[in-house]
Image 1 (tube, helix red, strand yellow):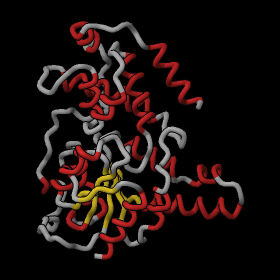
Image 2 (cartoon, one colour):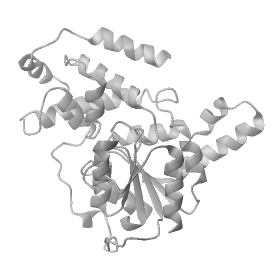
Image 3 (cartoon, rainbow, N blue to C red):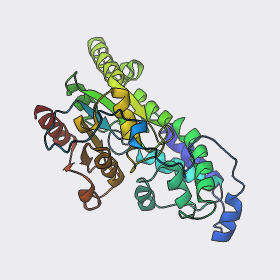
Amino acid sequence: MKIACFISFLIMSTTQAFVTPMARQQLAYTLPQTQQNPPLSSSASSPEAFVNEDFVDTKDEQVAIKAILFDIDGTLADSWKLCFDATQVVLNRNNVPSITEEIYHQGTRYSTPERLARHAGYEPGHADFERIGNQLGGEFDEFYVSLVSLETARFYPGILDMLQRLPSHVKLGALTNAAVKYADAVLKCNCPVHAQMQETGRAKVQVATATIAAAIFSRFGSIHGADSVPKPKPAPDGLWMVCRDLEVDPKHCVYVGDSPTDGMAAKSAGMKAVGVTWGSHKQATMQASFDHLCQDVNELEDYLHELLRT
């Protein structure tokens, strides 16, 4: 509650009068430089740069699943309000009008720099699109990562239990189009011993829950964000890097996400794409990008176990 009030105060205190598109651009030019995010123009390197020669998609229809990779926001964590409020703060600080929730959700398919550049009124191809996006993105990352908590970025109900029940031999990884520090913070705040100790009442339950949560976090053998890969989703580079870290062929992996770009990245990387419909995107916009859609966490768990049995 305190964090929500703090964000609301920042939005109110930093909001300025509506500015014209021309004035908006002039003001945006004065944003401080930052190196938090990679340039939007960074091109994806060839698959060979991240995947060894054995990582070749053979187009097999049925292969053994050895690793499950997850998106973060809208997939594991119910964190959209944190990101939406932090976006408003950063935009208002830089004299850019607030956006609607609908516009925010539409923008989540992009990496943070590209999303914020678009929110600021820029389009790809504009001379300042990359610079403004990287500047706003750096400011956003620094601000919202510090606000991650169980109050602002808690796992959806059932997610922790689902992760717990995945077989121990299955490797786990995570890839987000947000910053890698953010992904790490969200996973840690949902899985650390101290957080679980605070949430439980009886001593025996405390110990058991804390042990489970800590074990789950340690199973994520690779965590990447848009700022730790050559090119963000829908490019497959980040997923290839996670596969390399886990030493698993992409064809033996599943990627679970809530955005069309998640499905596109998974298919480009040569792995099965599983979508969830409880995130930022409507089912109608996701069907073409995924091999399978799940309506709730129970269905996702059942489907993942079905894939593991093949």
